[in-house]
Image (tube, rainbow, N blue to C red):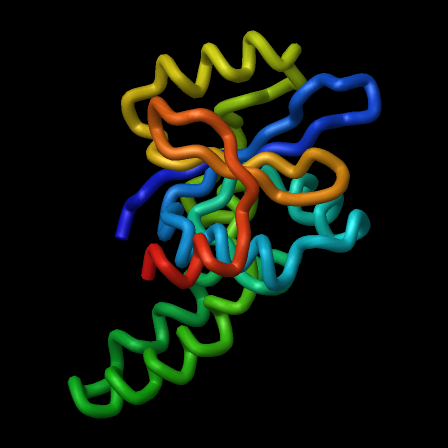
Length: 162
């Protein structure tokens, strides 16, 4: 589902760096992945280095250009295609799909440079397409839904929302 979100971090200089994520932005999607797989500063840094994402996976790596793998499905009948695609997706969806390595190169970024907190908050609040924002404050993930304030992202939040 295209529930769009922003994943952001507070830098040591208190500026906010952010990336856009197109899919599964609700707490039981992106929120749960962040809580379960992105609490190590090295993994968070690698994630942010990928740039804007089509989807977030549990590995802060990009699977590369998928077109060559996806072309193989066209030669299969429906039953074989379905089985092959399910196996393919089980593997690929564990990674983060960055726009920078997409076949249709989308290297532009929604937030190309860090912003002061007030400017970041205003940009997010002004966006009609962003449903959720996740912010790593150096210690924990916080989240907000469009128009709300930030609150701690907890296991209860990601489970209750499901």
